[in-house]
Amino acid sequence: KILILDFGSQVTQLIARRVREAHVYCELHPYDMPIEDIRAFAPTGIILSGGPNSVYESDYQANPALLTLGVPVLGICYGMQWMAHALGGRVDAGHVREFGYAEVHTVSSRLFNGLEDKTLPNGEHVLEVWMSHGDKVSQLPAGFTVIGSNPSCPIAAMADEHRHFYGVQFHPEVTHTRKGREMLHRFVLDICGAQPSWTMPNYIDEAVRKIREQVGEEEVILGLSGGVDSSVAAALIHRAIGDQLTCVFVDHGLLRLNEAEMVMEMFARNLGVKVVHVDASADFMQKLAGETDPEKKRKIIGAEFVEVFQRESGKLTNAKWLAQGTIYPDVIESAGAKTKKAHTIKSHHNVGGLPEDMNLKLLEPLRELFKDEVRELGVALGLPHDMVYRHPFPGPGLGVRILGEVKQTYADLLRQADAIFIEELRNTKDEQGVSWYDKTSQAFAVFLPVKSVGVMGDGRTYDYVVALRAVVTSDFMTAHWAELPYSLLGRASNRIINEVKGINRVVYDVSGKPPATIEWE
Ligand code: XMP
Image 1 (cartoon, rainbow, N blue to C red):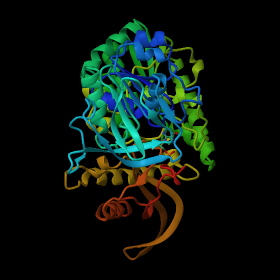
Image 2 (cartoon, rainbow, N blue to C red):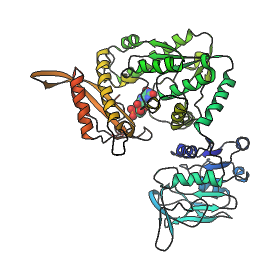
Image 3 (cartoon, rainbow, N blue to C red):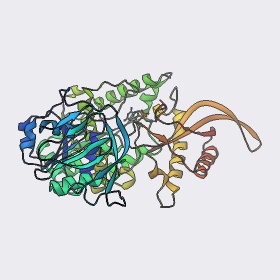
């Protein structure tokens, strides 16, 4: 297993993802992880992340004793500078910030051999990389040689192949560094010799054993939302403890078309999971009546959800555990949230956000997993591919996709329009046979409570508008609107206007995030 020490870079999580993609288990910890804990973790290799600071000025110092453990170390950007500094080299403040694409000339090393992007006529190898730094290493520590350089950064990569220490000034974890993934895999598999045994089918047995050990004979409640994380958590826990698990599925009436039936079909009938289906749509509609403010709507839905969930789970008096589908990025994010202050753009609500005062112990069997791994695990547990690879759906559901006041009639119209759009996305494939549903990260319809004039047959219509939204993104922090084929948009629009009585106009949203957000509210 690999230990990643985080010095605060925006992209540290990507290092962990790349390592896991090599099927090697890794964990991400703060840069100041105590040396005893590092020893106890017993890593086969250590990766030091980048970070926004300068080695001479900051408190961002790891314990140099980690360089005496006899395991390979790879320093990235700040991580390289810290290593150089700790081993007696020198780091200089760069006067020009180098940011973006760069070419690095390499010499033979275990880290780079065979990975060059091009070879110059004089036989020199070149890597195409992504740089983002001010400071740089200006003098090598004893025992190191330069293995990569370019004019603005003469020591762009360094190595002490004897001790298996490597440093790169660029970022191999981002996709702009074309061979970055291979480099990280080379480091963990070849240089560290880590075993690629971290696969989801292998993981099931261990996860099941852990859950049984943790829970014993006690009973567990889980809030099932139909989303990927809670579904996979439910399937995994059910595999481990069967009927000791009860799921509570709160239908707030703002789900997609047939979603409640699908969830019940899948879990209650196919898998034999005990599911309490609470149809609370009337309560939610009543609480939302008259409210048009987006933040207030979010708060109402979140609060009502907690109330209904607590009421229903309170009836399960034997339960001692509350299971949640918390995944690794949530864990890292909430650990990081203590230091990072962000503006609240939207107050998020999801099934995971339940109050702590429920007097239940927390069971979070997906805490170590990234989203891709959760999906793989779901498939390995026998959940249908379509469910596991579904686009994300926000906790407040259609409540944030019906602009302004939420009404039952609006929700019904929107559900139909949305289902048609999704069906067209699933049925339209590109030349490689990949559907537009899979080519986009999230797609949905939005209900606009404005009326416009149209003509249908011989008659005049005066009906509502639906906006279609489809985005492409890797992290949902920024997003591009999807360049869907006109023919697909045309078919979706025709069908919605013809099949959904009450909608006579369809528009496509061509706003990026930022400045727009993905959801409209
Ligand atoms: P925005 O609209 O902020 O959305 O660009 C980014 C991603 O977050 C989802 N989203 C939510 N997910 N509870 C959730 O579980 C929420 O309250 C919520 N609001 C937005 C949104 O669908 C998109 O994937």
